[in-house]
Length: 436
Image (cartoon, rainbow, N blue to C red; front, side, top):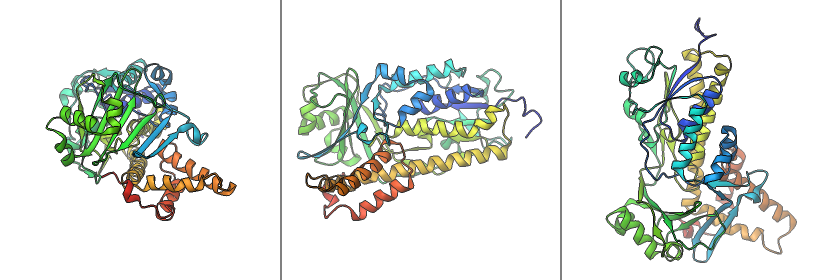
């Protein structure tokens, strides 16, 4: 440890004020870190990640944001999966208490992100409203640094460079681009189109998120917000192109021709432009190096299926902040070796978490999870004995722990799901539930 360690605050520069960047800024500043947050304020009006998983709520409480979030969001009691016109499975989170938190929220993302940034500034974070630029290190020991003009925009940071630079730039992965770091891509090459609607028809449970398998491929979502409904379609890019030339044409055609979507949004009025997301499902080949680290979507992005995005972003902030906490507590800066050990442990945990979600989402796409749900009806039949019902309840809790974020990396829960995926479908062919 250097001679100034006893009195030197840990200096962290974070680029990007999405959920991951702002949450990390809050946690580090509260613990005594000297935090500079770069963000130019340019954000799209619609952002994917409008539906949260229950495991987010304890993190919101830690950040002091649940009450505010509840004020502009809608409580999400659960999710309904619609595999066909005759096969629907509805899940409520309170069914799995105490293994799973009993509710989540559906959020307007711009408002949510703004609340996080406001909380960060109130925590003492220094906000620099410029578009920051990364560049490879210049021999000072750091592999990735902020460009001179970026450092010059932050008072004091040029004279005293940060001990750690955090890339929280989301799926643009600006730090990875500066260092030419690739990513491991998932098997799907989908595109998502979504927009917000009013005057829709809703006869379902308030706040319940609906996920429906498309008859011609892909899937769609309906996420009820406080005063509007988010409707989205997710399709292979070639299939999406068949629906129309523009995102607006594609979403409009999907709603008009899919009987289920039409029953909800056929008479609805679109309130926003149509947002498009493509090229998701990735994990960075490397997420850290001397003097820098990736956070949230910059490290990896899974899939909007099961809605893990915001949870993974906030959880990555928790993991990194907790890893740095010993030095924050004693107002010291770690040596380069100590910092690398912290970043390596964080990277391992983040990679494991992303990989576990990848595996879980695959069970939905290849039909195994739907087949298991169908097979579970046998165990819950009226004439099922006590032991069968007890086993089914145990299985349900383990799957709930995985899909809620409560224990997605649990070796036991994942192992049980793998075993059931091989031996527990009772002759039901998962291919009939595949989402292509």
